[in-house]
Length: 476
Ligand SMILES: [Zn+2]
Image (cartoon, rainbow, N blue to C red; front, top):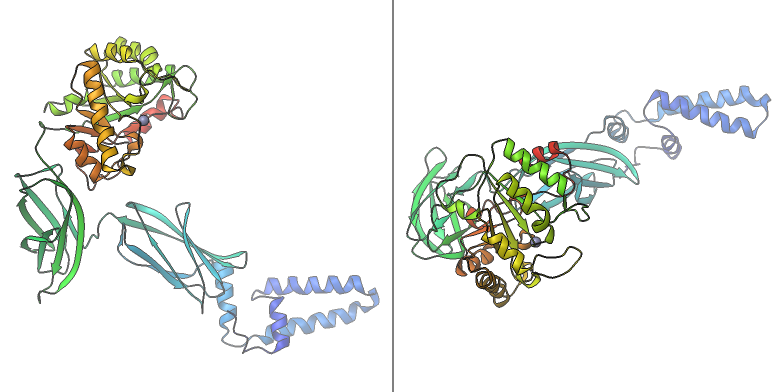
């Protein structure tokens, strides 16, 4: 807050109606003169001029020589700058602290992009805001705004990078990881001589650090979803200088030679008049399929991802939720272009009416009997899988698979997570129930989970209504 000890009371009052710029002092004097002029008679004008001159003199003589209040207030108002530091590096899940000084302000607010992430009172000119990111990203815009009351007195922007892992200590490997198969781990360990590596609490070996890097091989003897790779970096005195932990999923066995396709599209209802955001109009859908065809994309089915022989520009076209428009509108368009697609249905809703009706088992059977189309699981009840008990989770995975296999007389080894909602436990149960491939929605968890059980998809909805928007969506 303002330190008034350097001011006489009269000087303080003058400072309240003034500030450091010559222009503003003149303005203040004009205002004072006008007020007095209205209250008095014209004959006092000479007297008022004398008073004004006296005020002007006082304003200039009153400020102490080395006046922090003036300079800082002026900085804040007219240069819009103040000092702050951000803890470095910024790592997902770890607290980032923003500390700094904002003299003349009483409150500082921090935003990342457009979201407020925290605020702090300013005490003795200082502030501190702590925040923990839950996703990585580069060039995030951190904006700090200093307030005095409701007035913004300063605003400063810094661009920050948020790392998935502490870049001074990392460990990476390529997914998927299978038991009884050697895995190469590589990592960075700055300022360390050696690293000790653990799986949960079990030490599995040590590695020497050369040029800040280490490599390490290990073969897991059992599968599991809740394992953690733990790396402890030690200095020359064998003291632990830093430590990280990163989840790892070890699969029971390799299911064919899985390849990630170049593109996976996710559609829901195709209808002449889109209502919901996930709906796509028939004409837009047709235009999008024609564009893919004309631009060298090759449609493949989910089963083809295990063939070890994907064509160039491979695309999987997926439909979730089993809506009737898939059968009425999408099917003939795809057939006319000889394009493949896979349909993911939640089995309790097959044939059910609704705001959009669902396909019947007869219609699904007709799809499934075509060489172009397959039908797979989207659970029983379209459940948020990460929220279920182990028993309910098993039911959603097992019963939907069994219903599709019984009704269509085909294997159902693929699933799309409703809402793209999954975690390590869901993946383990998906594997335990005999699924070989699972689709997510976006790129969530790409750092931690095997791709085979978390393939990201690009959702297309009614907001994509020009072909240029479609091209941008699938190429970004
Ligand atoms: Zn769905």
